[in-house]
Each structure stands twice: as C-alpha cells, then as structure tokens.
Amino acid sequence: MPDLARFFRQLYLIRRVEEDVARIYPTDKIKSPVHLSIGQEAVSVGVCEALRPDDVVFGTYRSHATYLAKGGNLKKMLAELYGKYTGCAKGKGGSMHLVDAAAGMMGASAVVGTTIPHAVGYAWVQKVKKSGRVVVNFFGDGASDEGSWHESLNFAALKKVPVIFICENNGYSIHSRQLERQPHANLTERAAQYGIPAERIDGSDTTLVYDKVKKAVDKLRGGEGPIYIECLTYRWREHVGPNEDYGAGYRDRKELEPWLEKDDVRRLGAKLPEAERKRIEAEVETEIKEAFEFAEKSPFPPDSELWTDVYA
Image (cartoon, rainbow, N blue to C red; front, side):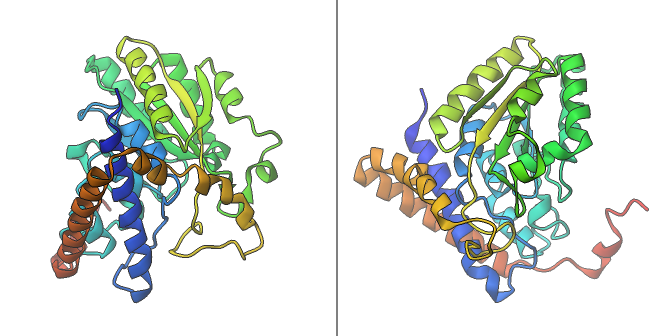
C-alpha cells in the first residue's frame, strides 16, 4: 500500500525547496540557471517510490524533483546550484547536471533527448548482467522530436531491455505547444508502434503514477521488455527561471487553474491528520534551512579544479 505520509513528505520537500530556490535566485547567490519542477512533482515522486534503492534513473535539465525523489542529497544539490565545491558535481554542473550515483540518480543533461540512449544502454547492461535492476528514463514531450527518441525505443523493444520510459508531457517544448510541433498529440500511440506497451495517465495523481509504475517494475523484473508511460502534467513557472510567464503571450493563466485544483501537495496533505501534517512540514522546513546554510557556507572550487574532470 502507498505510504501517503511519505508521499506527502516528498512532494512537500520538493515544492518548498523549489519555492525557496525561486525566492533566492534573484539575489545571484545561485550561479546556475534553474528549470523548476513546481507543478510536476507528482510524476517523480510516484515513479521513484515504486523503485528499489538500487534501481537507477536518468533525468532531464528539469530534474530537481527527480533527484530528490530518488533520494539525492539535498545539501549537495543546493551547493551545486550555488556553484560550490561541496556540490554533487563539485560546482561544475549546476542545476541541469545533477547526479547522485549512490542514490541511483545517474545524471541529467542540458541537451534535450541525450539521456534516452544513455538509459537504454544502461538497461541493456543490466539485462546482460542479469542484475534484476530496473532503469527509468524521464524526458519531456519535446524530446520525442529528437531522433534519439526513435532510435532508443526501437533498440529497447528489439532487445527487450528493462527500461521504463516516463514522458513528462507538460504540453510545451519551451514556448511551443505540442500541436504546433507535431501533427497529432499521439506520443503514446507512436511508442506503441515499436511494440512497446504504452499508456497515457494523469501525472498529477501521485498514487496513480505509483501504482502504474509499480506494476511496470514487477513486469520488468519478470523479464518483460520496455514499458512506456506518458504522464500528463503542467509546469506552473516559466520554462527557465523563477517567475511566472502567463503574460508572455504563449499561454493563458486559465490553463493553470485545473492543475491547481488537483495539486497533490494540497490533496495529500488534506488527507493526513493535522498534527502529522504539521510535524512533517516542520521537519522539512528544518531540513531545507540547514541545506541552504550548508550551500551558503561551502567554498567555491579551488583554482586547481579547473583542470580536473577534463577529457580533452
């Protein structure tokens, strides 16, 4: 059975971290561009709660939620945003390149679609090794325009690798609506053409996402091939940055209203006893405060780091 208190804690943690990132960002203390997941948290939490600690995920440049939901170190994440040496990538990657291999967060990329073949290749290795581990790849609807999407789905289906493709479809590729880029909003049907079981679900329902992914995980551990789940979701803030952008001319705030109504941070919080909810919120606020203090006090990388981790 899903642990609603744990689900709420994860959702609340991600929401509050990103709200504080948005608040602090204009001060220029945060040295990295930020792509906020506010509004999309239920996808990452529902998916990652269905995984084992040794399962792995590959993310996108909008991966704060994925990183934290998979158990990534919060202090190291914020230090990375600050460009500090104690960050998860030693201050060199920033928000778009979060990684915590110990937690199974295998990395994110600023380039659209690049982690799709990475995830498939990693899953192929798991099959060859018979490790029993499952790989999850998160990507947006815009990544389906890339050739790597088609090539990776084809290879994954051919080799029956243990990978779950999670499409976080928020309806936009930066400022372009899906139907301005594609003749049909049929990503699930397109995935099914490769012989991959594919389904479209409401990505704002954490429990639903968890249930669907848990069943998919069980099938993959049983030897079945890849599975594709399109999670319909919505980002509340601008594509990149801390602000809202409903006055920018490409979308209207009325689009947001139904997503506010079914926000799972609010919905799941309301299902918990008030005392338990307040206790969780207080614990999370303390954790976030300590993590920001850690980032503030951490040093920047020394000059010698300029020449490390360089391959050419």
